[in-house]
Structure formats: structure tokens, C-alpha cells
Image (cartoon, rainbow, N blue to C red; front, side, top):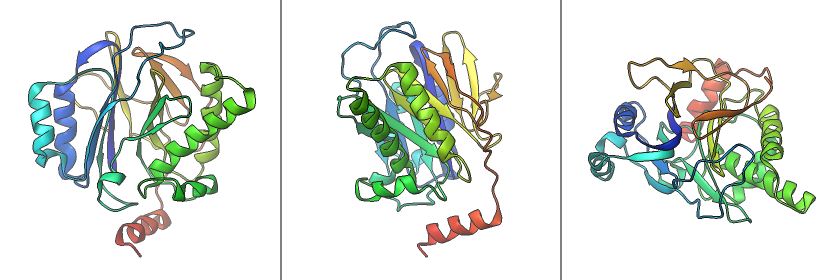
Amino acid sequence: MCELFAVSADHSIDITDWLRTFFSHSDRHPHGYGLAVFPRHEKRGPSEKPANQDDRPEILREPAQASRSETLAALLSQGIAAQNAIAHIRRATVGNVEPANCHPFMVRSMSGRCGTLAHNGTIFSYSPLNIYYLKQLGETDSERILLRLMDLLLQKERGLGREVTREERFSLWEDEFERMAPGNKLNILFYYEDTLYVHTNCEKTLYMREGNGFCVFATVPLDSCSWKPVPMMRLLSFDNGCLTDCGRCHGCAYRENIEDLKYLYMAYAGL
């Protein structure tokens, strides 16, 4: 369907080789690509609030096969360094091949902060997402997930009359992933306020590699070093390359079945 990549680090690192390998897989995922590189922030403790600065990422998205993109090739030839980044290559199932359907998606909250999300999977049934059909710019269920997460945050802050804490935000989104997971494939990379949130509920479809001050995530390992599967069926958060929160196991693993495959075929065929 798609492939995901992300990095969380406590300093800016060269991610060019990983990205070259990652984007070389686009012959199997030819319907678009995207790369979001986030502004570098000073290292801070888990309880410290981020500085009041622009957190809008630099995003490159094209509805084209990544390995055939001259724009991407030129960018990679210059080398790419990042402290936090998310990338995606798309094999379309829901939504046409056009710029508005390329991941990662970005939404700016009422407080001015950005949420950025990439998704490998499909929402087969989750009615709370339906109201976002008229609000989204593209057609994908992935964009609706992001709109839902940001909307829940806005509702929570309005109810409290203040910004939520890191702990409250994690709990809010952990509860939502638990509600959304049954029957749906949710491999998610979601970045908000210096924190990378990671979730998978499909076995052997998301891996991580830990290094000196960094952690890299990918759908399949990107080098010969030691990679391990991301813990399943729970929301995780990473800050400065370190695990900061590990949520409870919701127990809803996704396994493909014939009816899901029929749905994907019909959606892709526009039937």
C-alpha cells in the first residue's frame, strides 16, 4: 500500500542515505511521495514546553514516482540533514493520484501550532471521521485522521480553557487510537510540538533502529544495522530521539481478510 519513514534525534543528523534507499522503493509505490523536515529545536526535558517559534515544516510533495522526480533527486544530491523528519511513498488505494492526496499532511491548530501526519493503512469503518469529508483538501482517510486528532485537541483545550499538558495530550490521542483501531490498519507517524507519535497495529510493517541520540523508523529496514519491530497496538511518543511515553496495549491487531481486499480493489477502481 505505502511505506513510511521518520527520524527523531537530539541533534541534526544526515539522513540522505536512508532516504535514498527509502525512495528507491517507489517502483512499488509509484503514486506520490512526500518529505517533511521540521525546524531544528534546542534540546529540552520531557516536562519543558517548546519555545514559542515557528514549527511549520518544510514539505515537498509530488503525485509522482519518487525515483523519477528530478526535484527530489536534486534535493538528495545536496544532502539532507534533520533533527526530525517524516517521509512517505504512496501506492494509492483511497483517493486519486494528485498533490492533495500525497502524504504527509499538515494542519495548523487554532493556537498556531502544526500537526503533520503520514499513514500506511486504511480506515474501513470509523464514523467519527465522516464529518471531515467536507473539511479536507484531498480525498484520503489519512487526512481525515489528522483533522480528527487536531479537532480533539482543540475541543479539549476549549473545555479546559487552557493549553493541554504533554501528558494530557498523549492520553487524549491514546484514547482515540484505541477507539479507531478495531478493524482498521493504523500505521501512523504523527509530529506535533517537537514530539513524534508512532503507532502500528499490523505485524512486521514498521521497524525502528536506535542509535547514539537518534531513532529511525521505516516500513522495512533501510540498512544492515540492527532494526527491531515497533511495539504493536500502543501509542508511543519520541522526543530528542528517546522514548518518552509508551501507552497501554489496546489489543486490536489488524489482519488482512478477503473482504478488506475487495474493498481496496473497489476503492482503487472507483467502483
